[in-house]
Length: 111
Image (cartoon, rainbow, N blue to C red):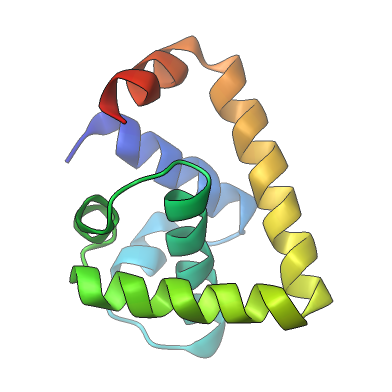
């Protein structure tokens, strides 16, 4: 597992007020599943990661990632609170990456 990927996951989890362990374990509680799906969506849409890379980070099969991505996309289309959460995640993670030159350099070489 790439250190940069783990750092990004840790930062996203802080913003979502959940532990990275909760996001990578098999817990299927609804509030954790929704946050997990939001992470899938963010990593795919904002960072342009491949399904397999997201799956490796989240310890899931890529098909699970695709399904969760679709669910997050649907939630974003209809729920204002989900849209607000995603906007916050998008902005604050972008700020974190921009302020951390190591991450910014690593991301531009990995994509």
